[in-house]
Length: 191
Image (cartoon, rainbow, N blue to C red; front, side, top):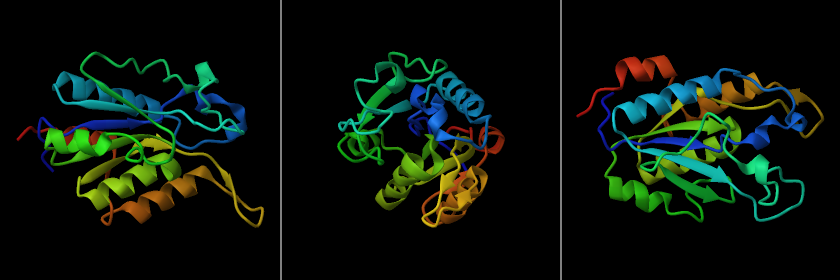
């Protein structure tokens, strides 16, 4: 796969709210390290980086409520630079209520590369919509992560299983699935 200079890296919801212990056990502890590596490579090659920040409009039990100022901040390793794009959303998809669709249309991107948190929520929803819009998403499997979840019958589904199922559901229907090293080794050419 060959990427153009206009193909952005999209980093979804890598925010301090995910440090809260209420989330429980998480898979892929190296996700942030891989995201950081991808951000560095994208910047080194002069490609666009888009950061998505979730800020909930409803208080309720959301860790992302606007008044939880520290929780909605990006994790420390993410420091948007002047050429980066930052968009805020209040629902699971980065396309709803934002100008992401228009930004990508204006970029004339051939692919978009998606990373972030969590695999089966905002990452999956955004990836599905990106595929439906024809943006040819590449989802980086080891640059995303999720948490254990309780099923409707009380059973616990491990985060690793949820992550794997999400990748299986998206693969070749909504996105191409790659890991960080494969992407950096095979897909870094500029057309």
